[in-house]
Length: 434
Image (cartoon, helix red, strand yellow):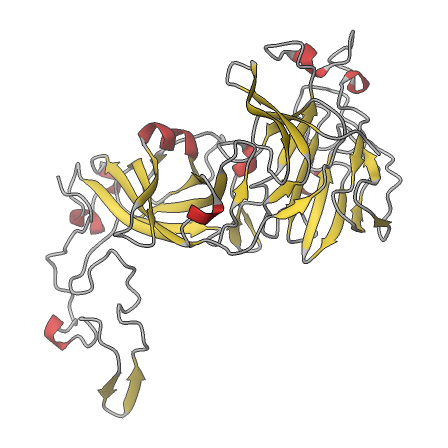
């Protein structure tokens, strides 16, 4: 079994290729190559464009093509007290055999750097999905010629220990070649091989998260969907000719009654409320607050609430997924977007708003199972075209989190927090409405 680094040295000489002794730059030299009648510059890259961790003196195939998405992540502090560096790795299986990713190591600095984070096979099975699978679900098995996306969330004790740059060592196993994929270059890939490959360099941004005020008011708000594990918000989709994580740090907020624990349908309803009525949900009609001073650039208020509460609508077009929407230009190229508002918001395009001002009320319009607020920041007026922006809320009280069994557990370290991002399934109190 051949392991890190993984290289298949092809024992083939391609017709028309010169020998290695005649290949200028094969040892990483720079300069110009004098050809009859021409002068061609080889540039200044001593490695000839070959990434660190791969040889420069022999030809070698690498079955996985590993690329970082959001390659300049901004570290953000979560309600767990950790500093999170969040991005994705795109992994193209450029081989004739089905690949299963089994281990991912984050290496500080470069291929020979210290391992600062690890995802084992079990974790990768929960954090990998295949592009255009019929269902958005974790899947570490990447078919031939397909692309997988690994959701990375490396946590550090403080910003001071976050590496300035990292790369990755990804291990995978390959199934035998099938008759369907036999032939052609498949002869170059021995069956049953396991690999360990370097790729996906990332440079940590020196920027800080955007600090905002709370988008909601009062107690008992559950981040039912949010950073940083697997969720529908981590779906990577093609926007503007690139694969973009348009909802990477977005949060779905729902108001809950924690006296009903484990959480059930009744936890989201007013006393005596009926689950089929929007107005009986604790969240419905709650005021939405401007998270910063700014001006309104989007105000959609004529979409009706969904009447089939608890059922995902199937007749809504892509442009209408947010239902009623308010987007605020909060400056420095950043926009705050609120989705699924109740119909009839008085907010108008061009209106100026101040932090804490009521801009609408929570509803159940658009692509929504029930009354909740989808909130995010991004660098475009459209919700998904620009880079999604990490943010920290300047004041909140962290109560605890809801586990896989839907039971709420207090803490750890429950209490007042400043400048933190509420993580997925955390529960917080916000200050009362002004």
